[in-house]
Image 1: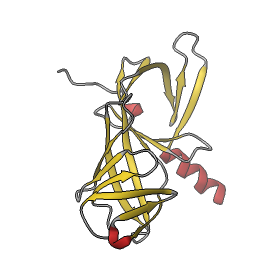
Image 2: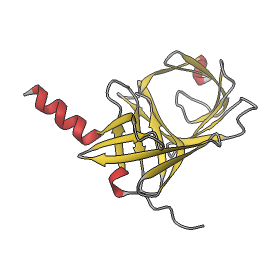
Image 3: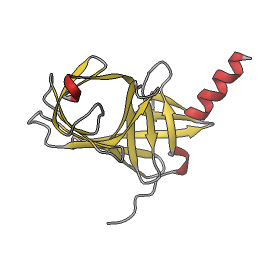
Length: 179
């Protein structure tokens, strides 16, 4: 298999103004999405994990820690949290025969759980990006990167569909507005 070449200007952490998620593109062509961390606590000697508004039932492991295997009550999705902070999500929907991988961390002295999921692989030809999702779909966009702003565009008429700003630019903007 040949190495995927990614435009270096794409590599980094991106935000969509007004959205709570972060998006990361790696030089290896991985595309990650992370939701903000959410409160987590354990019940019944660690056999139940309540993360935000979702409940998970432990199927493997023990203790008041995410480490182990869980079944989400509402969806039936399986979640496997490992001690090296990797996570694998096994989608219960029979229409989606895939798993999602990512990383996790406890934050705020163990009160919040954060997960970052790999959602796609990206290929790039310098003018177009193709997102190859874990669900098996592919989406093609035109793109430009200019001064820490990434624009995804309709590949046919080049109208802007989405604008991301780099995390670095966002931090600079917030710091400047605070002064």
